[in-house]
View: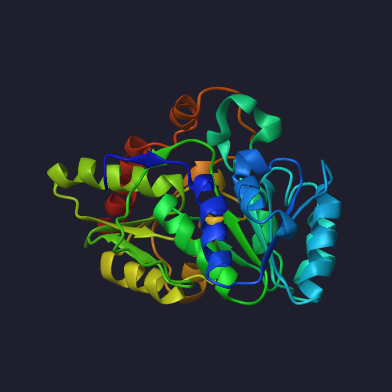
Length: 315
């Protein structure tokens, strides 16, 4: 982990500009928030490939479907609370069923959107997107992985959802890192317990492993950025080799990473588990770091959960 910090949303515009210059037939449809998602940077360089539809997420998806049906690689972006939130039916009928090459980048996801409050916190977006057949779902852990995930989405056919966040978070990876669709990344080896984390919680999981090390608990950390397809083999290997699992996510526990891992282990390798994430509630308004603390999305809570599953394993 470096001392740098950057928002994962900052990867979108520059990455699309680079890929278009490299020859990819990319177009972008925007629903009025391109400055925040950074998509508008692409529009300034390629105005003939940038279509602004105003505050109309359903229309954005329908226009994108038409462009994709004509053979374009289409990126759409807005705040995650608006897409998939306001346009789920259009995504289901217009994109998922025909499996068109539309790539949705949901910015400002999770409670770390912060001061904008519950109406702007997308904590159920993964539940919606994971439910759609054909969609690949990626939750980058930092800006380096976000750039690579966007490129993977652009270079592969079919629909993608890439979940990004508003604030600057620590940069975990260097230029040597390589994101692989459908593969978990071993962020830290360990033999006693595995923390499987996504997005901003990968950084917190690495901090938790440092807290556990002086206690003699060797904590493995898996970056589960590829939620769909899920790296089932990595999940099962972690269960076999460490015997205890904790999941950590900035999302409701129902329908996100916790549900995916629990279902996988229930079918193939029942294992002591604990879950860090949002319970059945919406978050209040506040600074993003304060909200993570208030709702227990912290290194300390991850470490506490790890101790509990290690104790259950030994018992």
